[in-house]
Image (cartoon, helix red, strand yellow):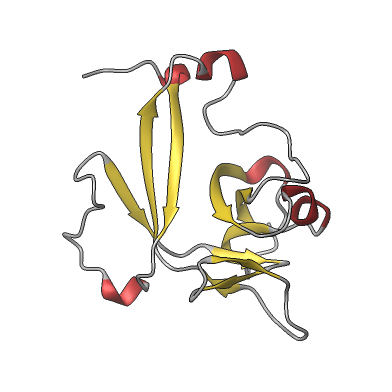
Length: 142
């Protein structure tokens, strides 16, 4: 079942699970075709777990760990037209989701890893302007 990487898109789903709720043998709902990821920290926005969506950052708020995220690779021949399987279309003001970039460290830049789609009542543009992003290691400057 080999697929060309340039024909695969990455889909994501934020769960309600905390990292400590997952065991070493846990897999996503789709079985071995999915990966459960934890250790992602959200910056410049906050995740509202009850509503499962992005909210404005509260004063004096530091990066908070996200719930477990399920990632799955999906065959999409149109992905090769975009140029990379890990980048979504340009942001819009009317979208009810945000394609949140995930970086290796707070330095961002060349440390881009992938994107996670997050629900939001606000347009995607709001979160781009707020520089909302997730990082794998929020305490290492680069």
